[in-house]
Length: 278
Ligand SMILES: NC(=O)c1ccc[n+]([C@@H]2O[C@H](COP(=O)([O-])OP(=O)(O)OC[C@H]3O[C@@H](n4cnc5c(N)ncnc54)[C@H](OP(=O)(O)O)[C@@H]3O)[C@@H](O)[C@H]2O)c1
Image (cartoon, rainbow, N blue to C red; front, side, top):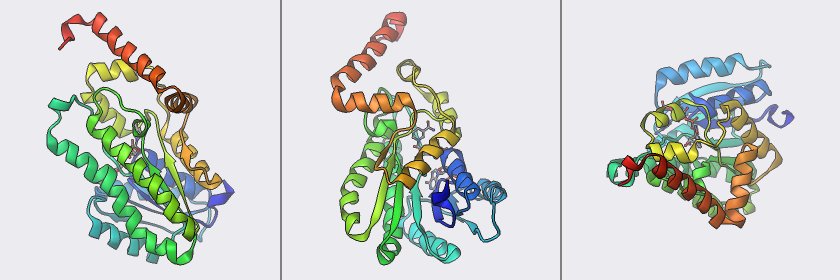
């Protein structure tokens, strides 16, 4: 994609899954990339993968190991990224964690952790880079939410709340950005074949599996491609995959029908497994 040639891109959660796939694509398309995550070893290995996808000698690459839930660390990361690449054009707040479980089986610490990383991580990352984007009067912010950022399903009270919060934040921010010529894209991925999904599947309540089982899993490359294309085209909302787009359309125009379908799946599950009825 020509848009990314010479662009300077920063991606949180760039050591794995969707973030890593996005970083490699930007490198392949001639852009510079800095990635961040907490785990230094995995981040360094990811950086090598990103570097090996580069096509030119003028591209710059680097990493900043830090926790996005720490605002001071995000501010320091922003300084390092801007100095390392000589500026920044696109920032992608992608770092996130998930923990599906029924509400009373979810410790309150998990609710707090989801908000701290998924929501506040997005806030801190955005606030750290905004002074740079405002000063240059251009740039683009990508925010990775989830399909659970526009609809909730069984077992995702903690995660969906944090993903809805990102969307509310982004929706209000969009208008503030107009004066500074800074654009915004929100990504709503469906189930994507990443280490996060593998971990989720280990603990998902069976009801959640029954309800979300019909949604086709996408590859991180497909999802990252949709995000990067959406940013290049200046799209505000990006829902990867035909099923994802259809679900969002239905949820906007006939939410009762979406509820009827997912509640129907729950009823079917209870009928098949009567022993699970609470
Ligand atoms: N996979 C899906 O099905 C799916 C669906 C919808 C939305 N999403 C969203 O897509 C985004 C990427 O998810 P993924 O599936 O690609 O997950 P992943 O493969 O587990 O990657 C998550 C990345 O975020 C980093 N990270 C996690 N917590 C962090 C923290 N506190 N500070 C800094 N970095 C942190 C991880 O590295 P460290 O652990 O080393 O920090 C890793 O690099 C997330 O926001 C997720 O909620 C995923």
